[in-house]
Length: 504
Image (cartoon, rainbow, N blue to C red; front, side, top):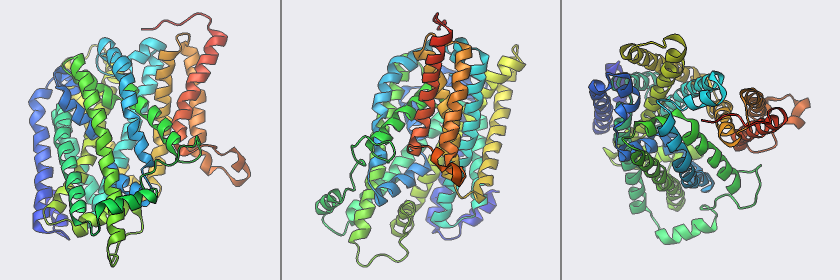
């Protein structure tokens, strides 16, 4: 397989760039596998023996937030339109305040391994199973989509075979994740975050150096053209303006820090409450300027190519392909390989995390809880490793199936909205509505899933039912689902449960 990959890599790239990419990929796999000795217990494999430093966990949170899609799509957004998606990043400090005050004390004070233990105490095992299975299905879909899209990105950059890329990146990520557990995920994420930032900073500096016109004049011209706009301040949830993205960002980031095991597991891996909060603030706040950097690169690309005379041959019309075009056609030898490695780094940092947390949730919330309550540490560890392998294979298989799918992002939004919105809604219901019982929670979740399905699938309604289409922007599907669960649960609890339910 390695020989096949290197044969593909030798096509279309200078030897130095191929060497940079090969050294990075092999280095990250070997580095991750080196943590095998620290993952010989279930606690070491899943939460790193709870002794990881906050700064490393923060970089891992940053790497998990970022992806190869952010690396390429965010510059494409600001190149074509404006900075309205950046509003999502501005919601993170707001959510960090909430997570630092409420979520981290809850997790570290009352949980052992997964976020869904809390839901069992609150509503019963069905809530834990629902959220746990939602997380696993969501992560398998996420693995497939991210692996497919990062492979497509590299394929478009250098023309390597798409199927080969998917299989090689999937197998290598599975390999070091199976061996090294959460510590391999955390420390490889640290390296990948540094590589990602290095590639982005290098591209930004090169654009500034090569700008063919006065930069200040160009920036002023771009500002007058609305390139730095946040999409308008009018409260309109139908268009992609400031408030639409802001509300979506609040809800999505509450889901991330509230019920997404990717982040909960990092908080539980910290050596102390202080280090857990440090990881939250370090990773969350660092994401704001990093995402601004990617949007700034898109604006610089707009200024650069609009100032060039004549317009370069082959300049793509599609915004998402402009940054790859710049990488291949403008970067010097060696730096091209570094940036391609950065694109791969962003994808692999998402894959390893999703694989590890899915295996953890299956082992703790299903295998240990239902099948083998008396399982030994060795049995739990073996189950986690086997599940890591199976989840990785399932995600890689999903990526291969998506090759013929023409609406990958639409498919991902449907998956994310259905499972993510439901998890957040039931979590908020348990915290904010003390009267809510298990029965009212079941009713609320069923109604909420129907609302999410309506928003996700309304575009496929037949012509005679077009008047029933979801009236808001697609970004509002998740918020509508979460709010529906919360409101229905609250109303049902008032009608049928006059006494408050117990809370943990």
